Amino acid sequence: MTVLAVAEHRRGELRDVSKQLVTAGRELADETEAAFHVAVVGGPDKEYGERMNREGVDVVHTIEGCAEFNHDVYVQSLEQLADVVDPSVILVPHSVNGMDYAPALASRLDRPLVTDAVELAHDGGLTVTRELYGSKVETTINVHADRAVLTVRPGEWPATDESGDATVEAFDATIDESRVRSTVTGFEEAASGDVDITDADVLVSVGRGIEEEENLDLVRDLADALGATLSASRPIVDNGWLPADRQVGQSGKVVTPDVYIAIGISGAVQHVAGMKGADTIVAINKDPNAPIFDIADYGIVDDLFDVVPALTEEFR
Amino acid sequence: MKILVTVKEVTVVDDEFEIGGLSIDDRYVTYDLNEWDEYAVEEAVTIAEDIEDVEVVTATIGPERAEETIRQALAKGADRAVRVWDDRLAEASMLDPATKAHLLAAVAEEEDPDLVLTGVQSGDDSLGATGVSMAERLDMGWAAVVNSLDLERESERSEDSERASGETASSDAGVAHVHRELEGGVDEITDVELPAVLTIQTGINDPRYASLRGIRQAQSKDLAVKSLDDLGLGPDALDSPIEQTALYEPETEGDATLFEGSAGETAGELAGLLRETGVGQ
Image (cartoon, rainbow over all chains, first blue to last red; front, side, top):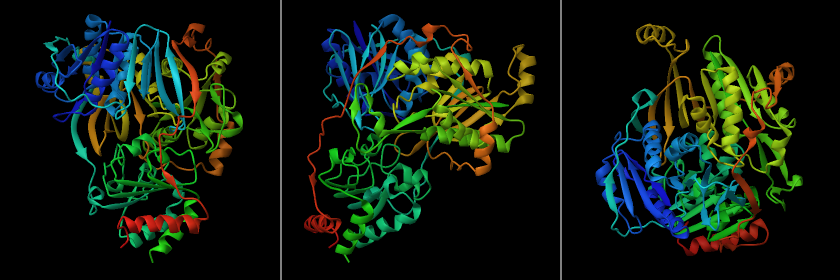
């Protein structure tokens, strides 16, 4: 048996999640006494192949492809590799690009797919733990099949940094160009304004709990009183209430301030990915079960409309 | 041109809740149109307003209760709706994305759309797989996590290429110029051949509120209910190798110090702490 993990790279960089996948894949392979392989598709595949030669990896397959990610090339390449390697489990990052090819790969290989795994176990059968309802509850899912495709949440497994003694070998895949139906024509960075939230020592960050645009003044006043910078979670930016350069999270900025004050932010995993590196995290939220309290150092479970003005008053 | 928007009625859980078996106790849940799908509906309706002769059909998998939700899409401007249901679906605590893709692809095959839009993921299960899985089943192109969409229809050019290649192309063929929202504030700019399935990210547009007139009109719009039989699917379409076995509240990993008392008291304690760390000095 073999577990196969697929590395992820973008714009000339092997992404960190690839090293986390090595840890997750090796653990799963150990539980089933399986071999552990890694695939690198495209990019400078030979160079990345060498870099994916990490502790616990038995074989790295490098597949020539396009420099940048293309889901058709990935699906076709991995389908052919799976025919040869016959992996019991294929692990893909639950990233934007992972979401763009894992479901198609599973469908083409006629395998079940479970996405966004936070824990994997194999005890007679494969069990996947994942979260539901915005991380309010966890669920376990049994996969009644001997072949599966799983996507794995970034940041849940530690990275494997030690180099290994894997065999690195090239795999020839034949790409049917007529079935490549999308073309990447470029990349664009989100416009940056005059404020760099990654530079701030203290961030006052506002989320969906603020309810209305007019209420933003409450947190603006607090930020002013504290001499802090205002940032936000995704819904505020989606609504157009604050510009995109204020967004903290997976699709926004990763910040590491001394103090991060989360106001009316539930703490969805995509947000936490952007601020968990803050030295001190303070959360104000009326939902005692909000996942933000799992990573907060200090918290107030109360209505922000009462607490925030009182806090502002303390600094005036 | 025809646009199919597949939407989901999601379960919204109260702040305080109890778990009964493999689901949240009914007393603590409400139902709503999935947030990501609202943006997909808006995108489709906007295209229909910008281009002549566009029909927007919306489809969902759900029990009768879900009609209230799908009527929200009709009230916002979708022309008609299809609801797929089989009572056996009620027995599954969580629907396999492959099953959903199978059923919705069957609707798409009947409707033969030029463009299929759906949300990136649902707010309850967050599997984020139905759209791409459906595209693969339909042998269409796709793009996941789209936060900008510009359609370029090439009816004339496709007729030329049809003659040149001798193949039959859809008369509505064209290209979707999209941005895919990658991590870290970077967009990938991609061209996708139509017909295609695009999964729509929140923030791509500003979803409208349904007008009173829209809500009234929605009541008289066509809402077809389809069984597996109607879609030419056998009962094995519901077979799934994925089984939910437990549902529980995760043990809190946090060790946050919680300030308690009135808002004035907690704010005072927090202010003291912030001053100690040098904030607001």
